[in-house]
Amino acid sequence: MAEKMEDVDGHYRMNPESYDPIELTRNLLETFDPFLQPNMKPSVESLKGEPVNVLSPQSVELQVLSPPSLSSLEDEVYKPATLSSGMRVQVSQSIRTGDLVKVNLASKKYIEKV
Image (cartoon, rainbow, N blue to C red; front, side):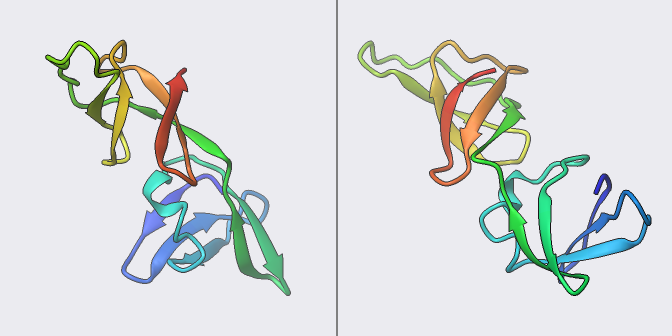
């Protein structure tokens, strides 16, 4: 499922074997949707040829887009950063624009620099 297309009803992925489109409705992608990136290959469980579940990984790697500002507070360990998915998370003070970071899908929190 290499290519990602999106419309108001959901996302479409291409079956890598048959090249047929597979529609993944928004309710199947509820928790994973903010993390979907082009060329991601989430595992899809099907029943009678219809997708019924998307197995999301525990974490994803995203690029930091906005230049995170350093905190003026010495005891503060984290700072806000905007990721390539558009999501904002608190990251370590050592993270810079362009770095790849790992984010936990369940908690939507920064794990580590990649």
